[in-house]
Amino acid sequence: MNRLLKNNKGFTLIEIVITIAIFSIIIVPLYSLFITAAKANNISANKLNATIIAQSYMEELKAIDTIEYEDKIYTYDMFIDDQKSGDGLLIKNVKFDGNTYEVYLHVEETEYKFDDADEGNSNNCRLYKINIKVKEKDKGDVLQEINGYKSFIK
Image (cartoon, rainbow, N blue to C red; front, side):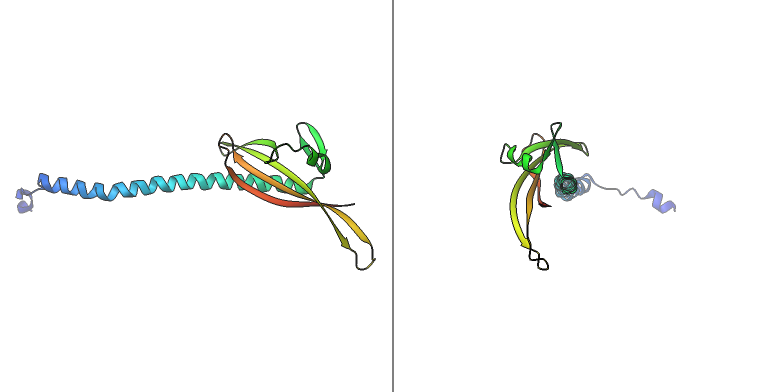
């Protein structure tokens, strides 16, 4: 035991400098990897939030027969005539998970016919294509865009 305490050998200054240099060569790329992963995680979180918002509005629109916009109630026919831009109407600003998102709605009408094989009757059905775009407020890039359909039998 006395022998270990009398051992004066230690690290030289050169050994310490080389160790720090090797350590920094390893740490710098790992640090940039963590920064890149954090940015990718933030982008993924925004896209996930936009997907959740878009899906919830799509399900809501499929379940109702009218659309509420600016304190007015529209039927789907009325809403089609009132659309203004290529993105559709900005129907809501949604605060979700610390960010603000803009929800745009665009509705197109298509009409199709189907034959009732048992009755021989031809029925008309209105089919509305619903397009929802979600953007992060003040950034302008579309984070999520989904399409769905709503049908009404005349």
